[in-house]
Image (cartoon, rainbow, N blue to C red; front, side, top):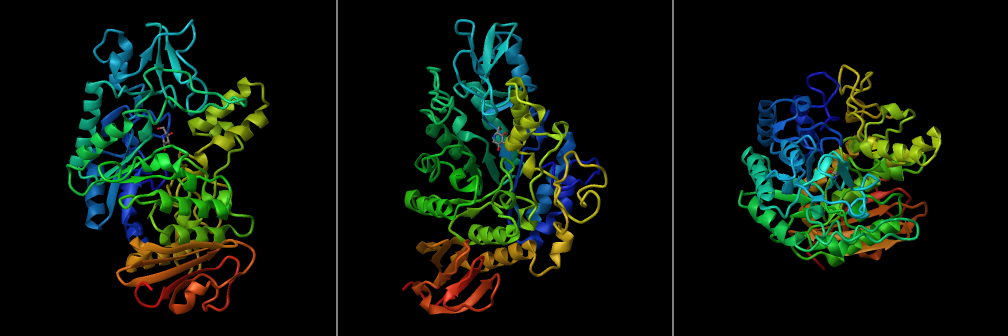
Length: 524
Ligand code: NOJ
């Protein structure tokens, strides 16, 4: 939200800017937008700390500007889903202010309060940003629970009134015309009520056994789902932080979340074609009929994949190959702004410029552990999510056309040629490649929602055949450095819909090549 386009020229992205850029999405062929939280927030964690669920944060505009944006998006056939944080509120929220004010306040139980155990926090649970997940409140002598920053206080979903208040929030935004939600850390809503310690391994790494995926969570999700789906044509995307795809798949499907992110594919730290293929395969094996895989490699929480995966010199080539995979494989693709022009990571050389709480916390913990400032900065950059949060690069002016004043966050060092204006008219730019892929995906049901007839890997080439409505398509993507023979299944090629390098096919697929091929006739 804060980094896409600055309409009122104060250095922060807003609804005015977003509205002005809607034609860009149409031009590109995007039909849905997910916005990070835009509600009033002290922004300790980029807006994932909401202090008023019923108001637009003044940095992003007014309610009227939000409504105009929704109206204009819908006019262009673009759906909008809102990121909603049900797990925790800001510590500045009036509910929490009431809860902390007095142990006997009716809202005390809206949050999770516990007594100390022998002068220590109630258990060993760690915050996902580092340090204890418990914050001591001197006045009452109790601790409150926060799975993330201490300014993001977990709601007690076992409390019926708190739960009801959150359902009212959902109804408010659905009535405003949004097309659904991306629900933040939705598998965290329940914690184990025995409050047992989480297991810790010999490297001091904690397994989050008792603070997520707890009994009752699926029933709660079913309740949320049936509530949201009373409103016609709404979609719920869930963020479920879990390593196990079998666990992930229990969260989606009929009466549950419509779509669940698979981070096992999306957030792999380094490029590995075997891992990517394994995950594509696994999603196919594990998912039931009413579940769809998700396809993404970047988000506001991880480094951009072009910086993460792009071996030097082949960054753009790899970005195009991954775009081919995301937009043709089976599943719902989520593209992250700026990836379509190949924007690079923002790395800080000065800790005072770092905005992300996860990075800053890592710095503070490193200093507290006796590391030097230089070492702490390296550790902070490793954790920092600022990497992918820099302003959208629209042109090659000083502030990249994002704003006319200095933006709230810095730009990456590598910026030259990486902007919309320059790439729009270059036929071989990353942007033109995305546009072409999106167009093909829109035109061909087999690419858009086809089923796999085949999903294979040969060397470093992933290839598959998908079919729908009598169409059969074959996609071949060679991620490696060695040529791969043309698969025998491609004997019935009738047309080449996309070829990123050579325009004809012969006996081999060269390194870095991608083809989308039309195959003859109905399913063999
Ligand atoms: C997941 C969000 O994507 C992330 O940005 C945020 O820090 C945490 N949830 C906490 O809300």
